[in-house]
Image (cartoon, rainbow, N blue to C red):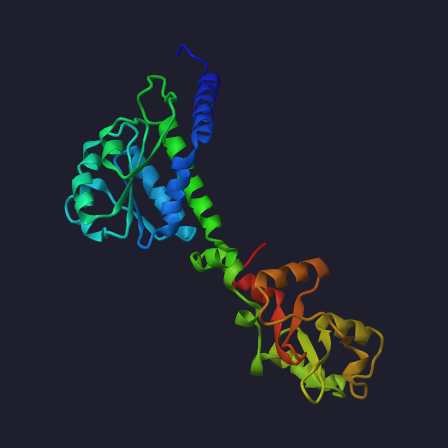
Length: 323
């Protein structure tokens, strides 16, 4: 081995970083036009490419879709054997080939032209067959591949990846795509749960809730708390308005003070005017409140301060929501 491994690796980084810088500086009205096309698209944004650009196109399509732009990858080989049936005249097809001469990609152009969809070329060669055959284009500036032979797609695929990220993110922001929208498209993961799960979805309510009216003797309150197994008891007035809360910790401290559980009422043990939360609040926000206040339960009330449930810290954790 006649070269330094670390220095060679750093050279690869430096070469690709330079390619990204050049691509960033080359962003112009052509890129803005492509973003505008995506924003006005009434169909889908379809990406295609062969080999390494095809792998990158798959990722870009996934990013576009997750950020609010209906999109998918179409393999150029499969397209010529039936997948072109997925393309409609309202769609935009983005064709990616650094050389602009990839047969599998260029051969799609006559059919796409007959379909009547909008075509966009992303290439490194302004005079290539691909660019000349598409309605719109973005041309990469001149830069070197990071491969020591200047052959393997390296800098070009990195630049293509970041260009695709820019397209997806800018279009998403222009659409005012929100974190709630993002959660709707990612419901299965922890991130989606953070953005979609509300307090009302996971709180204890109805017969599951541990509740007693004002004036209840402490012994009966202990029985209610024990039966429901929440470690928390909520005290309400005759009209179900929240008056106080008792935790198992409150009960232990109360017993240490020698309170008569057969005579004294819950008012001697409860925390008056406790912190509360709405069922419409995001569960992740409730988790933040509990962590900040070092509490493990919150009474849940409606707009009239009437009790609708109890939220436990463990309920949030069980739902897979973590900060």
